[in-house]
Image (cartoon, rainbow, N blue to C red; front, top):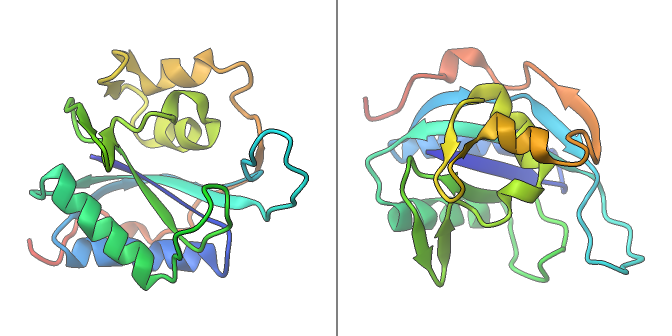
Length: 177
């Protein structure tokens, strides 16, 4: 299972650390966590609004939660971090996307797995390729690395990369096991 974390309000990397701790409290085991990537905020076409840059990471977890149950957990974590639902492009302290759940394909009104936008987003594919380059995305049958290489500019929008932002001793542990 792969999750994408993003945010651009407050101390985002601290919010990420807290949210990953909360995931382990909910029984998830962290398998891997990418470097953090600071990226230009996506804005709707034609927008003149200036939005602060985002930090983005991808993590791999193991969980016994079904996709819909995991979605409920991540929405609770987002809300506890101060996320207020608003316009699609609005700044936020935390956004957690379910990117992939093994080879499962889910098409529900409130949940689509694999995430429908991943093949166009270098800020997702770049950190994902760091921790699972050969993972095959179920919706298209190609590896993450290939998807990244297929982008016109794999570094588009990336401002900074920060390795070592997450304590490695937490990876491989969960509160339940």
